[in-house]
Figure (spheres, rainbow, N blue to C red):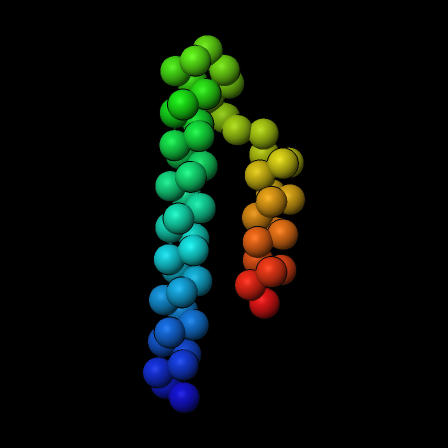
Length: 56
């Protein structure tokens, strides 16, 4: 049971770290090409909700 809980928590943290990496990379890339320094937050949140729903 403890192993399952630890695995669950680590998996969620890895997913969160991956999403953070994607968002920061996207923000840096759009900033370099003259776009906004902040990604479209509404689109990002809906994508994040879709990913979290798929993982449950």
